[in-house]
Length: 295
Image (tube, rainbow, N blue to C red; front, top):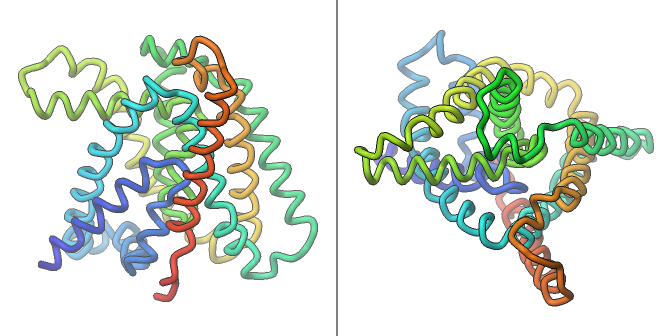
């Protein structure tokens, strides 16, 4: 029964990790498994049996949540790109109050902390100018640069998943590979439903292998670093995260892929996008500002 409960919590965390702006780690705090999650990751090799008894059911649940949610998101991204982008941006924006509260909870009233946030936002916008074009991702051209971006995306996304209030999917948005990741998740679901469709394996493995290796490396290598940063540089870390969120929201609406499914932008489309943005913000506010914050 305990393992089933862990799996159910994992499903909820997997769903959260796929949605930009919604933090799986925040849900781990709400579900009161966050401390044990970090401890199990950090002591995986020292106490493998004890760690795996906790991590396996939680991980299975997360995979189920990711596959189910990724398929739905891929459908909407392909057919309603602007509305999907608006929803994603709203979800990210809705997480700002919670992260700001975390940032200011320990000596966060000094003005220069906000300068750190501005600098982080500028860096994110600047980096977006140098990311590979979406056309290359769509073509899935196998090259060192393509694989490196996917690997780095896996490392950073898995690291972000461990930080309460931060969305791992937001990192994929920043790198421009979020739509590709959602499409790959949809293809994985198709393959699982029809295991003889071997033609799906090459494009799936092209994405899953570098991202998967990055996720494993990211979780094992950064869990201690993140634990250190949150303990010793709590305020600076969260203000930098705050800036990255603002920068990423700007990048979402400046990306040409946001408007790919629309022949032209009309007033009605803009109104719909604003409404969806507000809905996303409200949902994120509810999920990111839970009443249960105590361990």
